Amino acid sequence: MCLSWLINALSKCADTIEINPSAIKGDTKTPLLIIFRKDTKIELYFQTAAIVLGKGLWIDKITNRSLRGIPDIILRFTNSKESRLVIFDAKNRSKSSESEVAYKLIGYKDNFNINPFIGIGLYPSFDNFTYRHLQNKNNQIYLLHLPLLRAKKILQKICYKQINTFTNY
Image 1 (cartoon, rainbow, N blue to C red):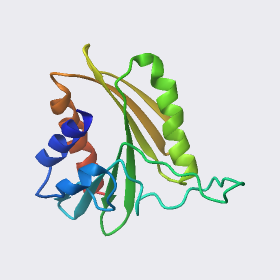
Image 2 (image 1 turned 90 degrees about the vertical axis):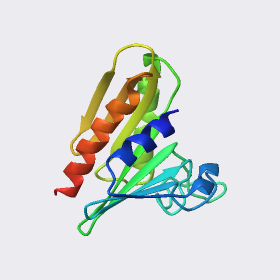
Image 3 (image 1 turned 45 degrees about the horizontal axis):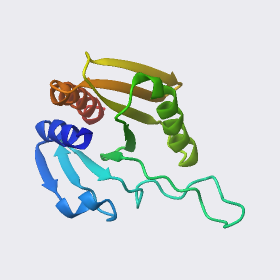
């Protein structure tokens, strides 16, 4: 559900759109959605860390392998000046799990050394739109409770604002 809302919201902001339906399986190294807005390319990856996050910094001392992470959704914004990641964690839970989701997002930031970091927890809700905004310097986490009937419109406004901020650097 959250994936559909996000795809819809991003599509409404796009100048052009490319869709790769086979990436819905999550085991490909390709983005599910690519949109272009002005000079910015935005790629949406679904349940894959391949080529996007790189190797984790935390090492398992028994296997000597990096700690992996597979976020629900990753957006990669790229233009001629920079590249930025936004990591989404979608949950079908109550507000009581907000701290758990925030710490999970902080774990992605730390393990993959993402700076600046933007993490977004998405929660479908039967109530009104509510959110929390956590910040540490230039790192941000948003925990969004989206009402089922208005989620697409709310995400569209958020995506449009963020995309325009990034494209107008």
